[in-house]
Length: 310
Ligand code: CP
Image (tube, rainbow, N blue to C red; front, side, top):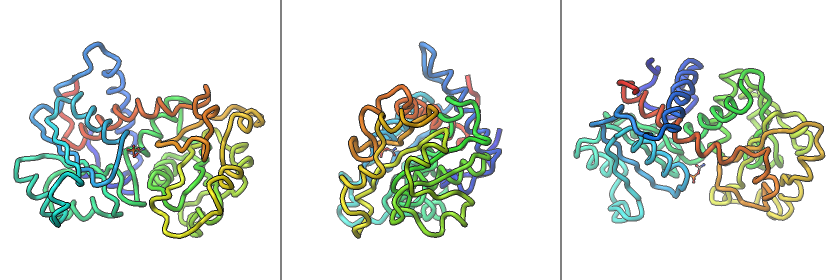
């Protein structure tokens, strides 16, 4: 089983077969994670650095755990505690780390394209753990894994991605992946948070009415308003956003079917999602987090050349 890519920079670069291989390998690793001994020797002697230039809870811990479960040696780098704060460039930082014989780089950066830049300049395999507003490929993969696990298929599935589409790397990775795998996609939210080009560019539906989007879909993947990436006022207030686009249990119960609720986290409770919906039996938010470890194990394992899996 070989991927067509050397790095995982984005879902955009993957073939349908690559996605299938990653999801199927993740299924095997999920089985490993149910065993009393959750560790396999697959990445013994492989050294991985986790370079986080931007905050993270889920992705960072998930990669660290995936590396430990695969028996890799891992090093954690936090930009704020490094010589980046003294003016060192990204390339110098990474080349210094690689000179200590590091095989793979997992990187999150606030600049879109930062991992693509590194991929042109260093020999190690790179996994994009989220770059600016571009892509978050392992989130897209774990979302797809979770949908497939819950509903048995991706082909023909109706997925609504709801909220701040404009600033969301999760939305981009989900759209690329779901379209490649034959799902139908609607993006929903206020017109100011949905790029004008998106409908034509990706052959997806746009819906500004939340209830219509929910009534249409099998799965709602709900996104956070990315205030840290907005440099202008795009809606009047969080309260008004919540009134028009917030999802609660009463709204879910008013639909004539039971849809699945997903969220990549972190949730702004009471804004895009109320607790009674986030914590309901329709939500698979914590299963997404659990599945993230198996999916990241699969990505690291396959990019390292796919040695024995036992
Ligand atoms: N979903 C996600 O990327 O969460 P973190 O920012 O906590 O890693």
